[in-house]
Length: 299
Length: 98
Ligand SMILES: Cc1ncc(C[n+]2csc(CCOP(=O)(O)OP(=O)(O)O)c2C)c(N)n1
Ligand code: SF4
Ligand code: SF4
Ligand code: SF4
Ligand SMILES: [Mg+2]
Image (cartoon, each protein chain N blue to C red):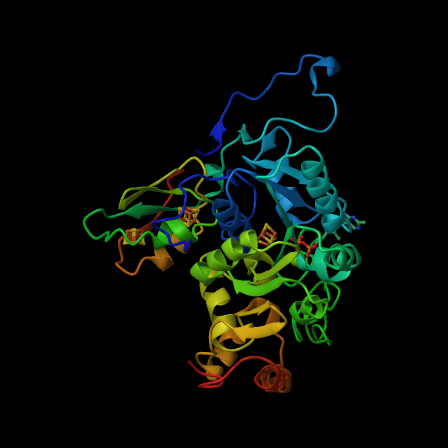
C-alpha cells in the first residue's frame, strides 16, 4: 500500500507533546505511527521524544507506549515482541524510536544483539545529530564541524559514523535511510518495514531547530537540502543489496546548507572544504558498492 | 481519533496516585497554545487542498477534513512549517495578540 497525504489515516497517535516548535524528531514519530496504526507498541528510551511525550499526567501517545532505559531500546522491544507472541497476540507491531546517541552510542549493543537474533521489530533512529535532550552534546552521529557543548571551540573533529552500513553489515532483512524532508519516501519505507519479517532498521534525519541553530520553520527545508546536496543519501538495504532511493540533486547546495545553520557558524573555509571531501569520498564508495546505475550523482 | 483534553486528575492523597508506572494513553491536561508568538491563518479561497501543511506539521494540529484544513489552536505551536509548505500561499503567520 502506498501512502500519501490524502490516503494517510487521520488518526493522531503523538499529540499535545512538548517538543520545541518545529521539531523534526516529533514529525518522524508522528508520521511513523500514522502509517503503523493503533496496534503498535512503541518503545522510547531516554531522549527528547520520551521527555516530551510522557509528562505525567500529560501522556501524548494514544497507542501503547513505554520508556526504556537509555541503552535498552532494542532489548525492551525484544521482550515486548516475545511477550505478545507468548500471549498469542499476532496483529501487533513493535516499534522503537531512539535518538542518535541512544542508537549509535549507548544502544548499539542491544540493537546489534536484536538484529543477530532476528527479532521481529522495527527500530527507528531519529537522528538530530547530538544529545539534544541534555543540551546538545556530541554523539558519534554528530557531523564534522558541528559545534556542540562538548565540542565548543572548533566544532566536532570526527566524521559522522555510518550507522546504516553498520546495521546492513549484520545482514539485516531490511534497512533504510530517510528524511523528514521527504515524507512520501519515509512513509513507503515504514510501510515496507511493517511487511518484512525479522529485524528492520530505519534511520531518519530529523533536524532540531534548537540544537542546529535554525528557525522553527526551516526544519523541512534543512531535511530536504541534506538529501539534495548529498550529505544524507536516501537508500535501502534488502536481500543483501544496497539501492539508492533518490539521486543527489545539486552538490553545490552544500555551502548554503551548511552556512545557514548556527552550529556551523564558526566553520572556516577549510572546514567547509573538509565536509565537501567527506561527502565526495562517501559518494565514491556508494558508486562502487551500491546499485547506482545511471546518472550517478544527479537525478 | 486524536488525544483529547481532559480534566486533570485530582489526587487528594498519595493513595489516589496510580500504582506502578502505567496510566491512560492519550491523556492531555494542558494545551500548548501559550507557546505561540504567531499563528497560522488559512485563506480558504487560495487553498488547493494539497494537504502538504497537514502532512508536514510536526504537531499534527493541521486537521484535514476532505480537501480542506483547519487548525487546532489549542495545540498548534506556531512553528510556521505549514506556511512554508504551502505553495499556494494560502497560509500566513499572524502576530498573536496578548
Ligand atoms: C544511562 C543513562 N545515561 C545518561 C542519561 C541522560 N540522558 C538522557 S537523554 C540523553 C540524551 C539523548 O540523546 P539522543 O539519544 O541523541 O536523543 P535526543 O535527546 O537527541 O532526542 C542523555 C544523555 C540517561 N537517561 N541514562
Ligand atoms: S531539542 Fe530538538 S529534538 Fe529535542 S524537542 Fe527540541 S527540537 Fe526536538
Ligand atoms: S504553525 Fe506549526 S504547529 Fe501550527 S499548524 Fe502550522 S505546522 Fe502545525
Ligand atoms: S498547503 Fe496550502 S494549499 Fe495545501 S492544503 Fe494546506 S493550506 Fe491548502
Ligand atoms: Mg539526538
